[in-house]
Length: 391
Image (cartoon, rainbow, N blue to C red):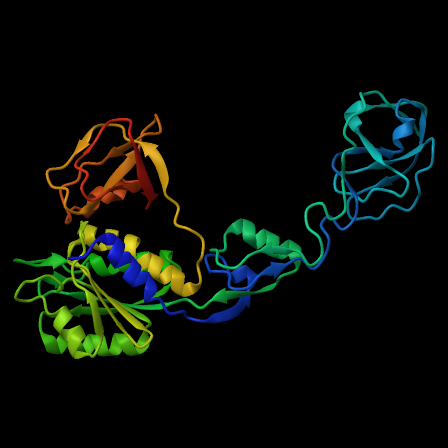
């Protein structure tokens, strides 16, 4: 059994990349940006008004001014501002030549027709300068990040209608076990419904990869080998759930070895999820995950998702925050690194949810995140900060 740190390092050192492709920016949400995005123009492209008001010369503040024209957004001004004149201007409109100040409507007084005066106290000019947000050729988005809605806006503003993204990893999902039936069937006798495959497919999709389900492999070498052969041919990564422990019917490691794949480890000092198996081939990776749903969920989030992210070109760090524990926590054994589901209280503390073990996946349905309990630590005092990963 190896440590979490050794397993994680081995997995991440085994990453191979899926390549790049171009997609319309409007279809890039959730993809990984693989090339810089640069602005094709200055933003703003000209000095513009930050308020509705009057554009004038600062030296005329407090004096009577003649209104030359009205400048709405989207229309370039025609007349130049000279001493004693101003132009009515709307937010976002281009500043007329000669103006260096815009005073707000609320700080103006209309005199006789076509005349206006500033009544406020002089301060900021209320002018957004050309290129103060972006300049032409500036890198506005760097590669290595998941594309979010705010990035779509920056792409649109920069004229980047086509962007380069990492190709989605292809992930095959196989469940194992004679006891499993699909969710649409009613279990009988010693049967249980297969939740792992559908959970994994959802996690794969959330990680920005493309999943494909191959069904339930029976606990025999022929069935498991047949599914593995097809899944390896069609995917970059294959995920097994179940069949990786040391029981009489846990045959996945044997099947992987017979397929010519290289075994890196078969047990990790983690709770839940000790029987984690990792094999690789030529630009192929196979994770043998435990059979219990919580173990599957946690091992995917901790080990598989970072692997898939790096395959796609992600360089941004996993976000973990430190939050105080809402109650004392203890455990009897501390020989493995543990992961505990938690909620956030009204006092912005984290509180462990009631959790009966690695088969109790319903405990995770109300959890906000998981906290990490390091190997060797059996006690955490109320109020002590703990590392929290959102799930």
